[in-house]
Image (tube, rainbow, N blue to C red; front, side, top):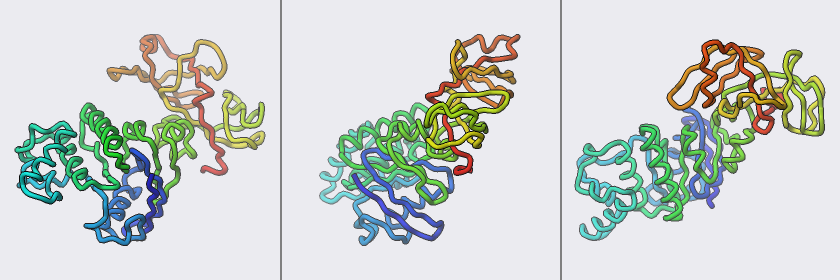
Length: 335
């Protein structure tokens, strides 16, 4: 496991202390400072960096995959991979072919980059970075230009190579698909690391609404604490609706809170706690899910596989909002 530290003031203010173990993802929106962090770690931007901050850029044991692949168009694929290798031409070619075999492209060795798809170029760039035998591999939005199938294949390749080569990888992205396969995750917002830890735990309990939105929570609604059942278990809502929810201990009666839940965690009601009747605004089939949008007692959107939602006479939906998935934040500390 590595501990990375980076501080710089230009082009943006950036302060990051992040653990990297196995496949680690740093999640953040465009402009948060993700690419700037990688460029500083490599040595392309001046900043206070550790480890290896005292070494020249070319001596840092870091492999770097920038956006756009940065392959040499005039070199064959094996020559791109072998660019940083030493030895005779035959030795360099043999090493490059072995790496291309690892990423599933041995038959493409003598082609030029313009013959390859985006996903294939990404694999070549990965093989070239691995050729340096780095102690850390940095990847900048590696799935941004890939279709869904190629993206999933690329994610599996990264997971496997991180294991097989025992190289920690830091992937900066806004792609939740990579985040769900990572061993560790950080969240970057406006140059600050606002959360880090086990991805499953961060997805289950985001520390604040902004992070929750970044992690795919798409329903937020305001409420007040109406009842304290036990420390950390509350009834929250308004005069028109109530929900039982878990939250931090110490909240008091009448306190304003913000609730949140992912649309895919909603359930069509079949009896029990946390059921509410919603006025249905619209529903549509996206090819996999039947998605719906409701307007009252508060705006809510979700998805289901139940075709009954599409019934033309359907104007109301009984929806269960599972307590175990319902999130709560204190409005006084998160607004």
